[in-house]
Length: 174
Image (cartoon, rainbow, N blue to C red; front, side):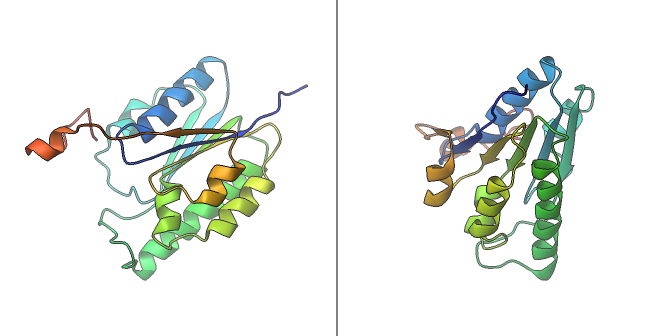
């Protein structure tokens, strides 16, 4: 009998949400779980996790979005199309029962920016396979998501090198 799986959220303005989700994925893969991570708003190809997870057994990473920054309220048709592609992939992964863990990276931001409707995410969570744990990451997690989750971790920024003029560092921020 499969254990009951839940919903986790990693949110807040601090660094480490995607990193925490990847750490959970490494742990899950170490136990033989099948893991799928769908990244929203991350079409750039320079993120270190893209190459870092290639050899991780049982792990699949799919990026949606474009290499261009999407300003809040300024989504282009292509941005909306990529978000739709991400949600289609998410629906298949979350409801199909083929994955033990599905990570929807930056889905909270995608909803805050109007690329994905929060109700669509909630309906997806309601339809998830009972054998699939789901993780939602990103700033701005809607209250409805927080209420639905079994575990919520809020990353709070106390200090960040960016505020001292240090640009994003390879291997640390990307």
